[in-house]
Each structure stands twice: as structure tokens, then as C-alpha cells.
Length: 248
Image (spheres, rainbow, N blue to C red):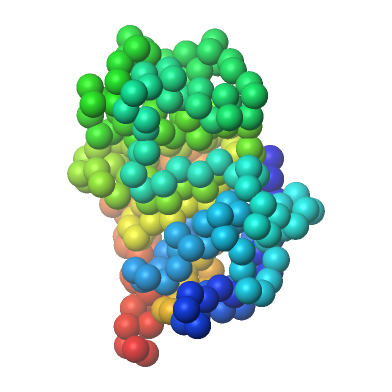
């Protein structure tokens, strides 16, 4: 498991600030979602955590170690599944392990089965549906040895019914693994259904505008999204998100 502590992070591009004095944390086994307007630097934040770029100011502390500018410490799943078209389902799933000098095909086949993809181990990405590709990408992330998962809008390209099915599937898998997760989404319902906490970012330059603790016990029933209480939480988060629009 992982503890992530981000302290006073600032980043700019061509003298245009994107993030300013941003601080947040993800505790061991916690599922935290980030909501914010387009262009608020959510993906930039993931690139900073992943070491693909460095901040101008601030620190990224993972399990007590400063990882500013250092790669290989997180498992990252981008918006696009990013499967390699020349590799099979099995080959894509074990890719993260191979990069780190490991290879456990038995475990990979187990997870592929848990994903409902038994029999597709030898299939190529162009033979899979959108939801199946996302499942393969998520299993690849789980198979990587890092204990922090950063998921960047992994279900945004899916239609509503497949998306809900993927959310339920993700919850079932995560309940067993309980890896620390930082999850980017634009969907308030998705954030409420999946998360322990929700962090709302301000407009650019972004900082943490407000945090919401989600009160629902786990495991969660999809029926909660139809409840009056769920709708009230959704309204409150929506009002917070739209403050930056009114301000701008």
C-alpha cells in the first residue's frame, strides 16, 4: 500500500501557471477522485506524480520518499487504453511486469479470468470491444508492481451502461486489492460512487478548492445513485465545481 503526500506544488508552462500551491494526500488503501474544469491541470498533476516532468515548487512524497522528477514509482492508466496493437491480451497485461524484470503469466491469466476475458488471452486489441480494452488496461495497471494507481478518466470514452458496468467491476476488483488510487474524472456520479474522498480543483492556476468525504459504506450498491441523498451530494459538488465559472 502507499501513502502519497503532495505539498505546495506549483507548475507553469511558458510562464503561464497551471498549478499553484496545490496540496493533497492519499492514504493507504484510499480511493480519492479529482474533479475539476477542463484545463485545470489534472493530467499535468499525474505527469508530475509520475516523474515525467518536474514542478517549479513543492514536493511529491510517496511512502516518505521525495519522488520529484523520478519515474517508475506509480502505475498509470491514461484516458486511452494505450494497448500495444502487436501484443496479445496476455502480452499487454504482463507488460508492466516485464519492464520491471518480472513475469508471472499464471497470475496474469488469473486476473484475465477475473476480468471476464477467459479465452481472449491470445486475442489482439483490434478484436476487443471498448469495454474489454479498458479491462485489459486496468489489469495491466494492477499487474504492475507499484502500489499507487493513477487512473486518468479511464471510462470517459464508454457509453453510460458500459461505464456503470465498468465502475462496478472496478469496485469489485479494488475491494480485493485495496491499492491506493488517485482517480481523475469529470463525472460527479462516478466520483461519488467510487470514492472515499473527492477533491475539487479550482480554475487555472489550480489548487484544491474543497474536499468532500463520501459517506457510503462498502461494498456499494448501484441503487445508491438513485437515492435522494446521493442527489443532494451531487448538487453540493456541482455548486462547488461551478463556482470557478461564475468567478471567471
